[in-house]
Each structure stands twice: as C-alpha cells, then as structure tokens.
Amino acid sequence: MKLLATLVLAAFLLPPANAQSAPAPTPPKEPTAQKAVLVTGASSGIGRKTAELLAANGFFVYATARKEADLKELAAIANVQAIPLDVGKQDQIDAAVQTIEKAGRGLFGLINNAGIVALAPLIEVREQDLQQQLDVNVMGPYRLTKAFAPLLIASKGRVCTTGSISGIATWPMGGPYTMSKHAVEAFTDVLALELRPFGVHVGVVEPGNYRSEIMANMQQRLRDGGYGGEGSRYRQQIQRMLTQPTDRTQYAEPDDVAKAFLTQMTAASPRQRVMVVPNLREAELTIRAALVRVVQYNAEQPFAYDRDTLVRMLDEELQKAK
Image 1: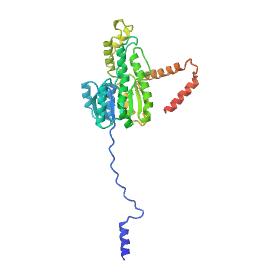
Image 2: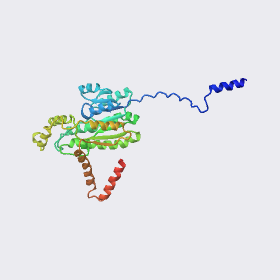
Image 3: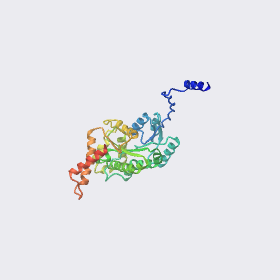
C-alpha cells in the first residue's frame, strides 16, 4: 500500500513525459558601455558638426577647442565634455590624456580634425608660416595619435583624420596647405599598416569645399604675413584671395562630412579613404588628379604598361574594393 501511495503521489507531482519545462529566467543584460570619441578642432565647421552628430548618436564626445567661449558652447551640448587643447602644445595634449584616462571610459575613436590654411606662393611664403602650416596639420595628428595610442589599442578603436581633396589635387597659391594634406595621406596609409596588427582601424575623410571659418582665418594670416608685400610677383593673385568672401555662404554646410565621420566610427568595416564632395566638378577634379599621376608614372619608363594592362589593373582594384 505504501508503494502504491507513493506512485500515485508521484503521478500528480511529476510533469507529463511530453511537457516542456518552464524556461529559465533571462539574466538582465549588462548595460552597453558608451563609446568615447575625441574630436579636435571642434569649435566650428566640420569639427563642431561632427561632435554634435556623434553625441546625438550615442557616443560620449570629448570636444576640443582653444577659446574659452567655444569651450563653453561645446560643454552645453549633451554627451559632450569640452577640453581645452592646442594641438601644437604637448603639455595640453598630456593634460587631455590624463583627463580622459581619469574619466574611465577609455577612448574608442580619435578624430584629428584641427587644421589651418596658409596660402602663399611657395617662393615667397615665410618659413615660419610654412612651419606653422605643417605643425598644425601634420604634426598635430602625429602628436595626438601618439599620445592616445595606448588607449586606442586597448579598445581596438579607430583613428580618422580630416584630409582634403587637396591631398590629391594641387592649385596655385595652395602650396603650404596642399603639402600638409598630401602628408596626411601618407600618414594615414602608413599608420593603417602599423596599427592593423593591434586591431585599430585608420582612415582619412577628404572633404571638398564646404562652409567654414577657415577662409577668414587664412585671410588674416595672409595679411599678417605679407608674403612678399607690395613687391610680390603674385600680388594680383594675393589681392584676389584677400577679397574673397570669408563667410563661404556659397558652400553647403558640412553635414555630409560629419556623417562620413559617424560612419567611420560605426561601420563594421570602415573605409580607409572617404572622399566627400558637394558636386560632380570637385569629384572629377580629384579623380582626374589621381589618374594624371598614374599616366605620368607610367610614361617613358622601361617597364611601362600598355592601355589594356592598365585597364585590367584598374578592374582588379575595383573588384577588391567591392
């Protein structure tokens, strides 16, 4: 009888053979850490638009500027911490590293955007003006990337620098600026090779002409420098540059450039080189400048390729790009 009672009780307590057990409760998900990105030169133009867009899309942005008024404006944006920074001053770079390390978020992205424009004929430009151009546009990204490399390697993050279509094309009076942007192209390619083994992606965004304050700053440098003064061989060209409208209202806002930086920070496989131009003319000018060099490299040398081989090589590269 005891055995029978036990079997009857078990029949009520045990689930049917075909019954499914209730699923185990799903443990709560760990909150996703907010990725941090540092944007230099965020006071206006491309830098400001990029900082705002990243912050609005879930990133925590460290936005740098030099002037107190700009820093206050940046600090008022949600998800943004303003940091005073001149890319030419190592002590300020070191202080920025300490600030970000203490915050504990790490650093996923570095956007080297700070830059200046110095326009002048190369045979007249003052050496100190050329040095300043290269110091800000080339040495600046070098200093920042070197300083933040440990954090970027730890996060397997990304480095992206603001280049320019002037890193491919050139134009009269643009020597100092185009030299700096050509250097950014080489900086990007070599850095990409060197950081790839550490899981860090490196890219460059190459804008065409967009609205910014860069022309007003350039004109002031032109007035301060003189570049040959009244005796300049190029005074007519310089005078035309000095009379150009400084507000650049004829150009579009750099929203598409900011979107390109956002894509570089979010894409599973970001591109190494991204050209962003507002019209077909600037796109053709840039592509043709690259093709002209190919033709010049290939001309009158003992290992020159014929047209069919060049086209086949182009097709191979297009296929790789897919």
